Amino acid sequence: MNHARVQEIPVQRSSVTVINQPVGWNDVATQPRTKKLKVASYCRVSSEEELQLGSLENQIIHYTNYIRSNPDWYYAGVYSDKGKSGTDMSKRIGFNRMIRNAMNGEIDLIICKSISRFARNVVDTMDIVRQLTEKGIFVIFEKERLNTKDMTSSLLIKILATFAEEESRATSENIDWAYTKRFERGEVVAGQLFGYEVNKDKEWIIVEKEAEIIREAYDLFVNGYNMTEIARHFIRRGYKKRSGEIDWDNNNIRSMLTNERYAGDVLSRKTCTLDFRTHKTVINRGHKPQYYIEDHHEGIVSKEDYEKVQEILEDNKTEFNRGDYEKTPFTSRVICASCGKNFHRFGKNLEKTMWRCSSNKKSELLCEADPIEEDQIEKLLKEGFEKRYNINQRTNDGLLIKQLTKELSNAEAVREREQNLLRVELEKCLIAENKAILQNLDTEDLKEKRQEIENQIAIKSKLWEDFDKDYEFREASLNRLKELKGSDKAINKILDISFMRAWVIHIKVESPFLFTIKWIDGKETAVGKFRGGYHDGRK
Ligand SMILES: [Zn+2]
Image (cartoon, rainbow, N blue to C red; front, top):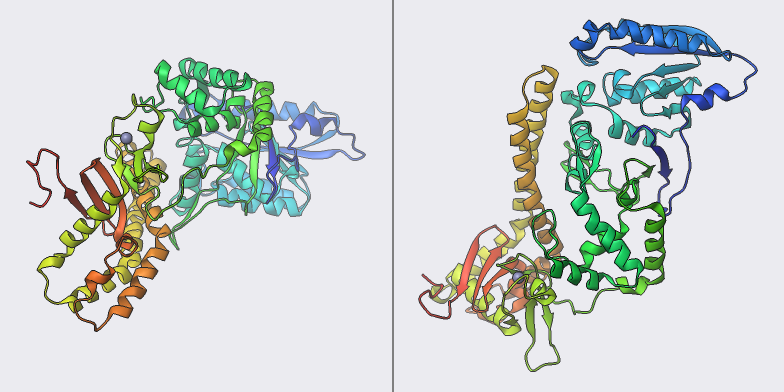
């Protein structure tokens, strides 16, 4: 991490461009100057232990000597504060005096050991750095090798989010920040990256067993194998993913071959910011800058091999074009109960159109699910719909039409409410966790609780996402219901697959004859029967 170089990628550009290259202090020291630079340093100890070891004194002596020994620098003072964390030092007398003096023109450059030792939180740091920058005063963060002179504020925010440490960051006004930081520091991202583990010092350690698989993929690809062939090879060899599964597909291989992290670099793609006032998640789709850190950790493949693979991929771009199967209202909504993967449509030229589990298609070793007939989807969906609404026992279609209209009209509000409740729960957890960190209390239980909610949100997110995509189905069905109003016994006329689709999140295929339908309100209905007939699905 010490030798990381950070590059900002400007908005709307996909290639990596160097805009600002932060310099270490050596660069500053060697720049010729007509006037001596007035240099100060800020020191503080961050723990009781450090205080006892005389760390503050050592830091003061170190920086005093360091500044004085540079002939181009004028010694403008070493400022310091004692305190366990930035947050509980509400006074910060030394720090404030330094900023005052800087604003009065007595300091040109401030050297600080690390971002976390500077201001109390990210908001303060941003404000102070901005004020200083306006006056032409810059800060060098030694540990992160950053000079604020060379940074835009958006880049600085990203850097702060990436490098700052727990201690001074956790304040309850800073939930957004605290949350972003957990993502940025790799708690989520790196923890799941095949080939690496993150140790307690946040260093990325290569998992050799997995790294060998990655290198083999690069090797095979460079030698002319395509991604599907590599995936099949991995399945045959029984190579395991993190999940323990062996169901490799070309998407897995593609992300392996295109992930710059395997060459030791990090490209931050998302600025996952949760705005808790509006309860909205903002995902970076090119409207905010991204940044690229070179040599962030040890690579698994060489930069040369990585580049070679990217070139081949660029040449074969047509290989990425999917779309070898036609989209239907149920594309990616028919799920295999035994392996969890989607059923894909195939054989439209055959007598009957069939759907088949995509793992099963890859290899029968992965999933033994039988194919289903497309007709079966409509038949069982209708059965499920009738079952759910007792359609055959009803005498008054008017009431049913009213009920269906109400359900569809309210569906979005219901989904929003569910999401907001979980978000609020998450917010509460984060506040409690941050408070506990500030008071040096044990946070394990709180962390566990938070992660549980995060998991729930992650699971629900997939459903919400699918639900949101179905907006057009709901609109269409609502319109058809409107047209029906008043007419008697009409509901059967419109019970076709595209009408019922508006109520469906997905259909799980337990067997070719037994499905479970998941509806938009989260309820489930089992339909069909086992072949043996001991279960008729209608109990
Ligand atoms: Zn399957």
